[in-house]
Length: 453
Image (cartoon, rainbow, N blue to C red; front, side):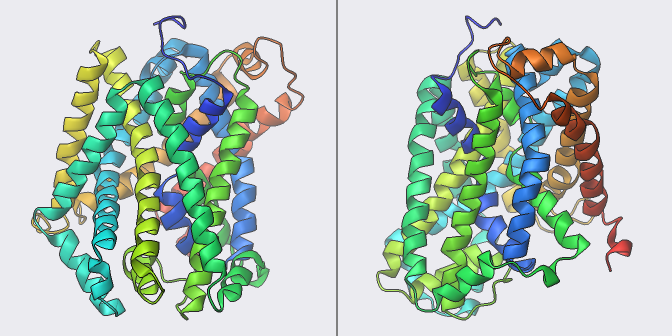
């Protein structure tokens, strides 16, 4: 498929919003605050931002180069540049498929909680124990989580089926500003809560006495996974970039926007948590157990709870759209299906996997695979193995194997732009990123614990 017949994004802003929609997701709003809380707040934030710039930015730019230079799907892009590296594209497609298997389930939870908030059902509970029981009962229900998961799958399908320009691009122009607007409103509200200043100080005042080698590894992992690199999404979206899109500026804008959203999420959550005297390291339960209890103590609790869970729905949707597109364009171009047929192939296959993953938390929980239920197994396999391997292989491919003339051509837009830090860019991709990703990979497998205990 050549550049003239393939869909393209409308402009530079569209490129940033679409790519940012892929990177901004539940990892920013749900995972980042509790990880920061577990690792000392402000000091972790500084290390995280440094990791984003040194690790995430070069690899994202490398994926942009691969995508735009070929204007192909993740598999076709690597096959075009070097057939021996085609497996790297398949790694991205497989990772996107498996991630959707559990990400759709969590997205369904956000939709369920938003509806509970709108109807006032969450306001009927008051203690952490009651919210814990509510959450446990919901996820173990044999049909309700599957229903909400299916609804979220269909919502994603509708946007994808509309195409790149009418579906993905238009949705990004609506969803990303909406997400930022909701975050700003919730941030202002949290800052006005009594005692919220303590939460803000915890989040922004570095305490380097709390920093350990483990803190750095956690920050590196969060920075990598937050940006949606190593799974084919950035390669796929860059394949829709126009020839005049500045890849460096786009990658920098996406990383900064992604970090800004994570910081705003911290500003939303930490003042609220400190206001009611809850430990900032409450962990993953912050969103579905701790925060509903906080909202219930506020005036207009239904309003704030509904707005917050709408935020989670929007954040989840921007990510599921990008992951779905990786698979849809792969089926379309590699299996020679129409876009409609490719979208339905992705929707039905991921819906089945997500339903099984959801049921593995309840009705099918008695059938573990290697000691894990399907939901946890998909999470572990993708986050700890496929994503680090994808990022490592990408940095090695672009840094060592890809023709430097291709890199210069894409980074300078056929010579119309200057690229003064070409040597630094290659150094980061060749040496720094692989070394760091190897550490992350070993740490994820528990092989570094002996050194940090």
